[in-house]
Image 1 (cartoon, rainbow, N blue to C red):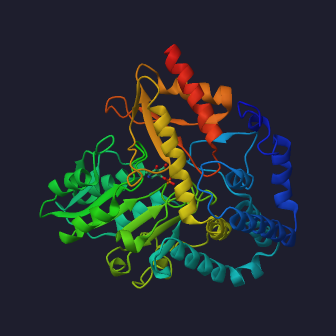
Image 2 (cartoon, rainbow, N blue to C red):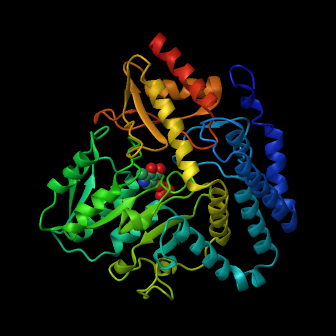
Image 3 (cartoon, rainbow, N blue to C red):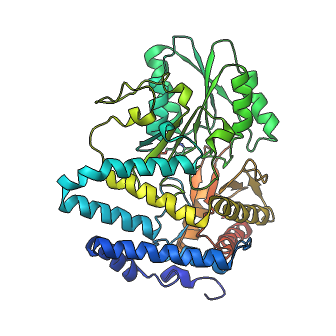
Length: 443
Ligand SMILES: Cc1ncc(COP(=O)(O)O)c(C=O)c1O
């Protein structure tokens, strides 16, 4: 790497555009056995690294540079936006290709064992988030999970649902639909940019509760501000008042070491293709066992009527099963590195970014520096600088992908940066160099 860290523009750790295309094509032509061998060799390398770098706490170093090589990046793109969709590790891509290939070549026999494989994925996901397999549904995405819960609950006209003012459309519209159709009432609670404390956050929701409140439906990972909502404390307060909590954690799985039992959340929807490295189009919905009978299935074929398993939300007919099976591989990939290690690394990079951003004149952080209420999403604005100019400049100069986020009228407009495990401190420094340049020239 040169002093700018710029060799990664055209060849990320040895992966050029040509290599990428070759790898992509190979994925569909290699035999199943060859793809299995490729995955085994990646996991063997990670195991060796784990043995050698047991105590590696640093944001950079041999460990993370090696991990970066296991992701498929085109043309040195420096992916610092894990919204919409994040990149896939190679073993996940291999499993996706392998499964499609097996299905394409022998669909009839494949269907004899697909259900068993899906059950194995369910068990893996459940263990990964500390849930019971019966509480886990494999959906298409967070939006679908949020809709399944909002649509499936029996609420009466005048019943109230509390949302924050920073919800994603995928978390707001399911309730808007219910409001229009059944006359429920939505109450919006403002949350700080960032909130001053966990207590302040929880108190804001507590104040808005009335005898008609049935559900608090909020983002666990707030896409506008990068806040990680203190779900555990919120659920404790809500449960004392008999209110259920639905969390939109689109970014949570793969970024945070999730524990459903510890948070005691009632419903939790997440999109594993943002931070977990699963393919687009596969999601996870957690429904606490005791509530399975309170949430009707929205789609129905045989199985919708069960009340003992979240499988009832999968009674949707044929699916692209390769996506679900690749989800299992994405869990395996992260398990080889370790959930705690991943969260620690992501937060260390985010904290470094925030501390350096504060040195740039005019920067206002929209995300807390407290690692308890922040994660891998860092949002900020720079006085007098149009956010889109920053997005365009760093893409053009460094091939760094970030995004604008928020709303001018609401004072939330700014930039958002994701710092996932394949990002190095050098990449963050390149971004900061670009931001310093723009801030100095006020463009
Ligand atoms: C907080 C939040 N909720 C919901 C969504 C929608 O995600 P999906 O399209 O995967 O359902 C997003 C997308 O980025 C998000 O950031």
